[in-house]
Length: 120
Image 1 (cartoon, helix red, strand yellow):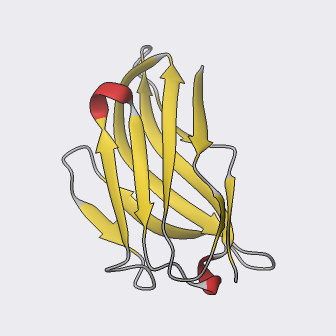
Image 2 (tube, rainbow, N blue to C red):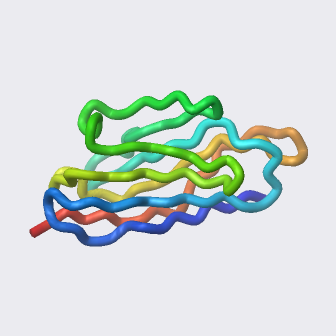
């Protein structure tokens, strides 16, 4: 079993910053890609940012230049630094990891979600 635990969400004013973290634990052999998704009320879940095991990144157009994704492989952790936050960034943010387990089976795992609210 693999568990993903997220932290770092909260309430912030427009223009502010937050840093999300997501740590994986359990029967992990290797983690391939890591990513952050978000889902606003009444909308579908969308990709925010993704980072490969080699460090290549891609971002949604709406967050380019404001958000930065990074990973610490030693800690099985992915981060999302969010700057210049806007009200439209308000959503529940989920991390996702493609994990190769110690049984050499590959699964996608999701975090429980953390609320980010951008409001004055």
